[in-house]
Length: 363
Image 1 (tube, rainbow, N blue to C red):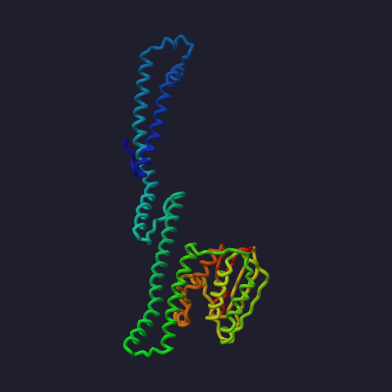
Image 2 (tube, helix red, strand yellow):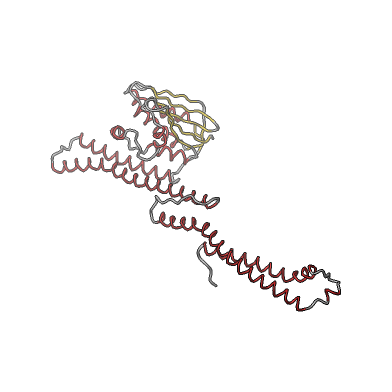
């Protein structure tokens, strides 16, 4: 049995079936009750002798007239229903057809595809959902392409340095002294650090990073990180203050230390000499909050939303000169989310410092 494939054809067929059932019901009802009502209209009741003696030809003529009228009405109703069903099905199926075509183009890689939010109700909701999905895919593709380019750029710098020095060693231009070996070792360490950061980021975002969740004394972790960073801060006369209360989070201790170390390293990288950095641990709104506040260059509203993106740098030249690859905050966000937490930044604006937060569930 043939079954129409398109939504438009199925809608037309469904409308015609409904019209056919309705007309059939009317035809049967009129055929059954019509003669009785006709007799009553003629003034003859069911027990009226005159009604019983009504000429058969009159009843036959009535039947012919009724059938003719019903046939004409049936033809007119079918024509009208076809026209109306065609218009309605086109209006309903049109946006869905456009949506299907746009979905095929998105599947082919054209992520900039959008559909007009036409229609009402579920059709409009479907168009809005499709456009939101396409926008998300487009943003993901942009990030993927940018990630590939940024990784290639970050790898190229140490590889170029290594290749240049190795060529110099091979040609005898560069002396194989302790300074050269230290420089080569530093570049290979930079490569290892970049590859390790990328691996941590990928595993954390894919929720494949092994976590040992247990009650963690966050204040103790903060104390360890601060003590470890104080010698480097003292060289630039930066004071690190710790403000903490007794707080216990359900988290991975090593990952909490990694998050705080990233925040504090960034703060020391951007804080001016002789300034003050404050590390705080507290409990708010049923969560454990860790924060690092500095008096560095601050963030604009746009930068606050982008600073956790991969390879994003507020000052690209300065960050690269200081050894930052722009992955640390992305790892922080991925680690926080993997532990059912959240990471974000706040700032009063440029030149007014920044505060980086992470919230974790309480034990």
